Length: 367
Image (cartoon, rainbow, N blue to C red):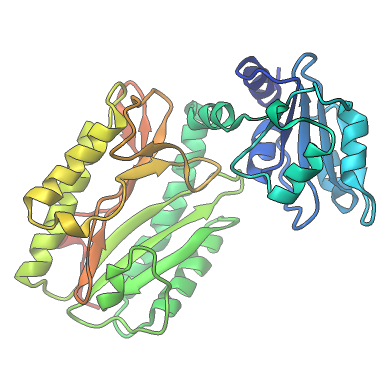
């Protein structure tokens, strides 16, 4: 049995509906091996939960991609101008008593209303938890692919550190990193890159602009790739340009110690809110708690933000196979910000994918 059919089998065992209709391209890739960006057109994976028969509905212009990669039983292409929902209803059958599983977090309202033409609201049920639960657990092969993605990301950052940053704009550094990442085999960037310097580094999700890197600045770089195998990376390092001030040292070391505390706590069996608390307590005790404004981390895999969520309200335990980030930060408006982010594989022992240095003396840049 292929890995994709095995995933389908696991999914149908976890849900109680007659038919599953998935529309998120990443989820469809996860269950079929076929990635398509349908733009505004309808893309759907249809799974009969009794027979486990799979059907892919897709824009006809993507026929060759489906032929080459999709591990599905039936192909259901639709051309521009055709009504794909009529075709879908003919494929899966009609009737108000038929139960349909959807991704409640992805299916747009207009498409939900199309389903309501044939199926009662009570029989249209979310299967997000089952899908996200499956995607949240990785195996050793996934781990190896993720390590490859992280290694490519870190190579580009080592190059930047060697070549220097002073006098370059945020945009120029971002463009430099994109070029390096692609030269090392990245298919694309997973986001950004997010390059922020000076006061801009106090914006956790700011936009890279024309601000130049100068001595005395923080330089926060948060970036990642999409690998050829479609796994993503996500890492952050914050540099200090020139000799740090006492306040810069205090802030940086508080984040660094929080990062280490979160990593130490991130072992299988530990509740996720405890991981968040262990890291957050370090920053609170340093006096900067009000400036740490987000959760400690999130899942990572084919998607940039997957399950699980390492936040203060999540009391679920980390499991073997989870891949999570640990990324504490302090963001002081008008002064600057620091974030340090590593990605971890939760096994019998926790594996840190990241090797790029993060001790303060190793992140000071003088060129």
